[in-house]
Image (cartoon, rainbow, N blue to C red):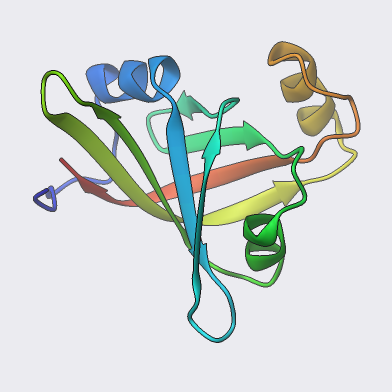
Amino acid sequence: MKKLDATTLTADQQKFFNDALAFVASVDKDGNPQVGPKGSLTALDDKHLVWSEVTSSHLWENIKNGSKVAVVVADVPSHTSVRVVGSVTIHEGDDFAKEYAAKVGKPETAPAVVVEVEEIFA
């Protein structure tokens, strides 16, 4: 993958994030990595990704403690992938979190995690 000179997702990249299973990586305070799938992840717009957090995993703990994330989607047959690196904003119990949870069929209490796109690799 090559770092792109952009921080804005193209329409094709947004569609890729909307259609493919995304994997999100973070690190804990000691630098230990954690990665897992996020089936509810979608492109919110050309500068943000979002998912509904329902697993309360190591990833969740890491982002609550300030970890940046890397999000990747890939299509194996075409050897195509896109990776985004960014900072997160957590929405818990607010209208945005409730509306997003309803949109993706998750419990109303599920936090919404928004990733601000800071780097794009493709």
